[in-house]
Amino acid sequence: MRTLKEREDQRYKALRQSWDKTWMKIKHMPMLRQHRKEVQEKFADRKKSELATFRSQTRQEKDEVRSRYPFTSWNAFLQHKASQGNETALAVLRSRKVTIPAQAKDELASPQDQYILTAVLQMREILASEAAPLRNAKCKYRVDGKGAIIFSLPDNITIRDAGQTIHFSANNDKAEALATKMAKARWGYSATIDGNKLMKAPATEQEIQRDRQMDVSGFGR
Image (tube, rainbow, N blue to C red):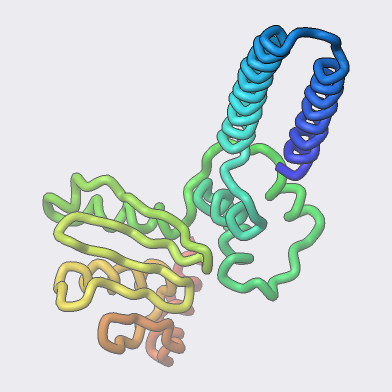
């Protein structure tokens, strides 16, 4: 956008210089008052037409750039990439202290096909196991400026997955049940609840032993 603005300023400056040059010629041309008025009116009409064309062209150029690059800041760029399924972008949004390796920066900047965030896939699996209308609901979501994934579902259900916490619609049993399943899918271990917020809790000894047994069982197959 900055390059486009600089080019726009240069083109407008060239137009101004052309108008000033033409106006000086008109001022120094010997002619009758009536003729001078007619020439000035034609000049004004031409200037108005050229200005309208200039504004139309610059508007089209800006619209084209915005359609190709739907973001105006680094944070908006990260939101855009996270919405496309880029887990690195999501991690950076959630913790701006994260150091991004050079390779990851290249991956963020390069064009890529649409992928799906892990949390979104998990939510889709949860919805598929629910009763109607949730089972048939489209998994609508967006990524906010802090990296939270906000799901908007039927029955006024809103679930906000912020990584270490999951918020859900207050006074809504269905929302709480979905958020609990989401927490289980996201963290594996039990979560603590505080009002309409679930928080990642340390694994209990029983859960750790259970996972160890599952690992051993899987290894022995």
